[in-house]
Image 1: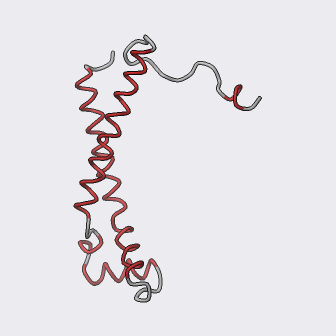
Image 2: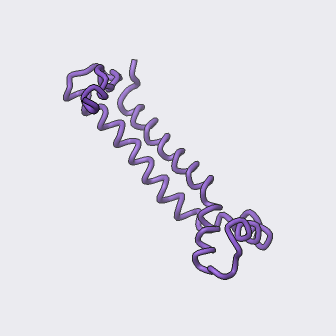
Image 3: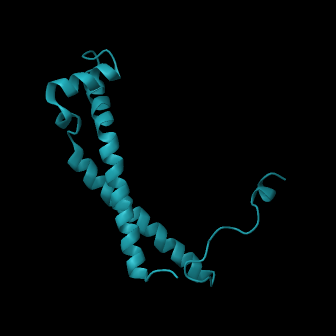
Length: 116
Protein backbone atom coordinates (compact mmCIF):
# COMPACT_ATOMS: atom_id res chain seq x y z
CA UNK A 1 0.00 0.00 0.00
CA UNK A 2 1.36 3.39 -0.99
CA UNK A 3 1.77 6.02 1.75
CA UNK A 4 -0.47 9.06 1.92
CA UNK A 5 0.45 11.55 -0.86
CA UNK A 6 1.60 14.20 1.62
CA UNK A 7 3.81 11.67 3.41
CA UNK A 8 5.23 10.51 0.07
CA UNK A 9 5.95 14.13 -0.91
CA UNK A 10 7.81 14.67 2.37
CA UNK A 11 9.79 11.46 1.81
CA UNK A 12 10.72 12.51 -1.75
CA UNK A 13 11.67 16.03 -0.65
CA UNK A 14 13.78 14.73 2.24
CA UNK A 15 15.51 12.15 0.05
CA UNK A 16 16.45 14.89 -2.41
CA UNK A 17 17.78 17.10 0.38
CA UNK A 18 19.84 14.22 1.78
CA UNK A 19 21.18 13.42 -1.68
CA UNK A 20 22.15 17.06 -2.27
CA UNK A 21 23.94 17.17 1.07
CA UNK A 22 25.86 13.97 0.37
CA UNK A 23 26.84 15.23 -3.08
CA UNK A 24 28.28 18.49 -1.75
CA UNK A 25 30.02 17.00 1.28
CA UNK A 26 31.71 14.30 -0.79
CA UNK A 27 32.72 16.54 -3.70
CA UNK A 28 33.52 19.91 -2.13
CA UNK A 29 37.20 19.22 -1.32
CA UNK A 30 37.83 18.22 -4.93
CA UNK A 31 35.98 21.28 -6.23
CA UNK A 32 37.97 23.56 -3.94
CA UNK A 33 41.26 22.12 -5.22
CA UNK A 34 40.04 22.45 -8.83
CA UNK A 35 39.09 26.10 -8.35
CA UNK A 36 42.42 26.88 -6.68
CA UNK A 37 44.26 25.30 -9.60
CA UNK A 38 42.20 27.34 -12.08
CA UNK A 39 42.75 30.54 -10.12
CA UNK A 40 46.48 30.03 -9.53
CA UNK A 41 47.63 27.84 -12.45
CA UNK A 42 51.38 28.19 -11.80
CA UNK A 43 51.26 27.74 -8.02
CA UNK A 44 50.69 23.97 -8.00
CA UNK A 45 52.37 21.09 -9.83
CA UNK A 46 49.14 19.12 -10.06
CA UNK A 47 45.92 18.17 -8.35
CA UNK A 48 47.50 16.06 -5.59
CA UNK A 49 50.03 18.81 -4.81
CA UNK A 50 47.22 21.38 -4.59
CA UNK A 51 45.08 19.12 -2.41
CA UNK A 52 47.90 18.28 0.01
CA UNK A 53 49.21 21.86 0.14
CA UNK A 54 45.77 23.21 0.96
CA UNK A 55 45.27 20.57 3.64
CA UNK A 56 48.67 21.31 5.22
CA UNK A 57 48.21 25.10 5.14
CA UNK A 58 44.63 25.46 6.38
CA UNK A 59 43.53 21.97 7.35
CA UNK A 60 40.34 20.15 6.50
CA UNK A 61 38.37 23.35 6.94
CA UNK A 62 40.24 24.90 4.00
CA UNK A 63 39.07 22.15 1.67
CA UNK A 64 35.46 22.93 2.54
CA UNK A 65 35.57 26.67 1.79
CA UNK A 66 32.48 27.72 -0.10
CA UNK A 67 30.42 24.81 1.16
CA UNK A 68 27.48 26.85 2.43
CA UNK A 69 26.35 28.31 -0.93
CA UNK A 70 26.90 24.93 -2.61
CA UNK A 71 24.85 23.19 0.10
CA UNK A 72 21.99 25.67 -0.21
CA UNK A 73 21.90 25.35 -3.99
CA UNK A 74 22.22 21.55 -4.13
CA UNK A 75 19.75 20.87 -1.33
CA UNK A 76 17.16 23.13 -2.95
CA UNK A 77 17.75 21.72 -6.44
CA UNK A 78 17.68 18.04 -5.48
CA UNK A 79 14.77 18.38 -3.06
CA UNK A 80 12.61 20.02 -5.72
CA UNK A 81 13.81 17.56 -8.37
CA UNK A 82 12.92 14.49 -6.29
CA UNK A 83 9.59 16.00 -5.23
CA UNK A 84 8.68 16.89 -8.84
CA UNK A 85 9.66 13.45 -10.08
CA UNK A 86 7.38 11.77 -7.55
CA UNK A 87 4.50 14.12 -8.35
CA UNK A 88 4.95 13.53 -12.10
CA UNK A 89 4.84 9.77 -11.52
CA UNK A 90 1.58 10.22 -9.62
CA UNK A 91 0.19 12.37 -12.44
CA UNK A 92 1.07 9.71 -15.04
CA UNK A 93 -0.58 7.02 -12.91
CA UNK A 94 -3.70 9.17 -12.53
CA UNK A 95 -3.92 9.96 -16.26
CA UNK A 96 -3.35 6.29 -17.11
CA UNK A 97 -5.93 5.20 -14.54
CA UNK A 98 -3.36 3.04 -12.77
CA UNK A 99 -3.45 2.12 -9.10
CA UNK A 100 -1.46 4.30 -6.71
CA UNK A 101 2.01 2.87 -6.34
CA UNK A 102 1.70 0.78 -9.53
CA UNK A 103 4.91 0.13 -11.43
CA UNK A 104 5.32 2.49 -14.39
CA UNK A 105 7.67 0.27 -16.42
CA UNK A 106 6.61 -0.94 -19.83
CA UNK A 107 5.49 -4.54 -19.94
CA UNK A 108 6.98 -5.06 -23.38
CA UNK A 109 10.67 -5.06 -24.11
CA UNK A 110 11.34 -1.69 -25.72
CA UNK A 111 14.46 -3.02 -27.46
CA UNK A 112 12.12 -4.80 -29.89
CA UNK A 113 11.10 -1.38 -31.18
CA UNK A 114 14.54 0.22 -31.07
CA UNK A 115 16.62 -2.43 -32.84
CA UNK A 116 14.38 -3.73 -35.60
